[in-house]
Length: 271
Image 1 (cartoon, rainbow, N blue to C red):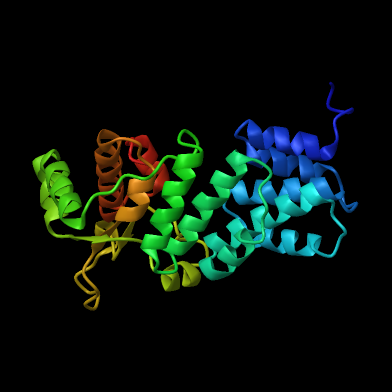
Image 2 (cartoon, rainbow, N blue to C red):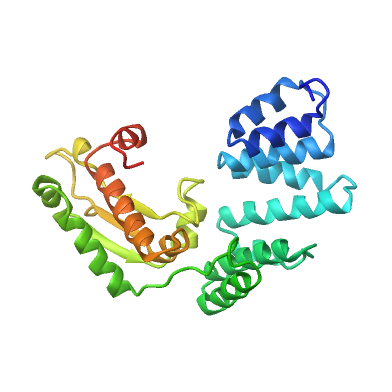
């Protein structure tokens, strides 16, 4: 099927599925100023979500509530809206929406349970979260595997082992930074960050990096690297992968301390 025969929505979804949401947004923009149909508007919102522009996506999804969507499109609208609320730090509201969804099959059921688990985690209910993760893994063990679990003490030991692998100059740089192990980014931080910090953030550097320091600067908070244990556990399927993710995140945030931006970190293989 050539591009002229495909609907606008199909073209946007195909770009998203191909891993190029920016192309999807270009296609939507090139369609002109006419109001898109329901599915094209939904697909455009999904493309905005893929590029982490959750505020725009949420606005579009809320606007779609004024249209009479069919069952499948309304399910998709609520599914995406709940994720936008979650990424904005509104886990309670996201959880409410996820409980309104009625999954059509076991895969969708497992996905909804997984997202409920994420929301419970960010509302301070890790036991309820783990119950959701276990049930999701029982239903769909390949698509929603149960997260690994390590203690804060065990993670601290892993951090020390990773630090020991650095060259001496980098070990010296790391030695002047406090490495703080936390379960999750606080909801207050997520909400106030304006999209800079998301609930699934793995690590965060706070402080003034070396290139911006001056002896004339007033005293400031000491630099810190924050590692978020529960998020790191969820992106790894084996202990070896988890150690690798902790190492990469630690080195990435150390790179920020040394003054590298995201492009520089990417050139160093630490993005």
